[in-house]
Length: 71
Image (cartoon, rainbow, N blue to C red; front, side, top):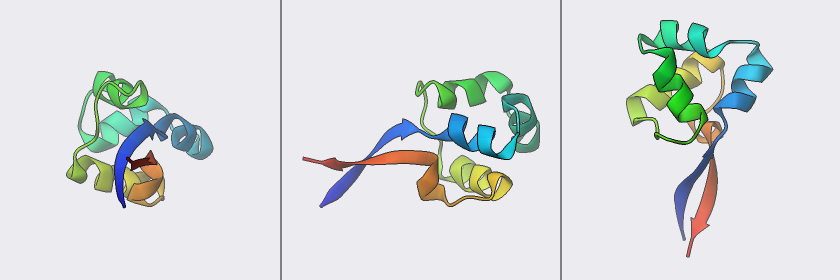
């Protein structure tokens, strides 16, 4: 069984932690626009970005996205 990346859960995780897109962008060293692309599912985080986001938000990398079973 294989999985594929689904919807980004970043909006939920940011809300849960009370962190803004701007704050996350500053901590990652990227633009707020880049974070917005992840939020709107216009871009998928690289492994490195996903790891850093998970550390900052205190979650696992697998929580950053919904995971769908690939048919």
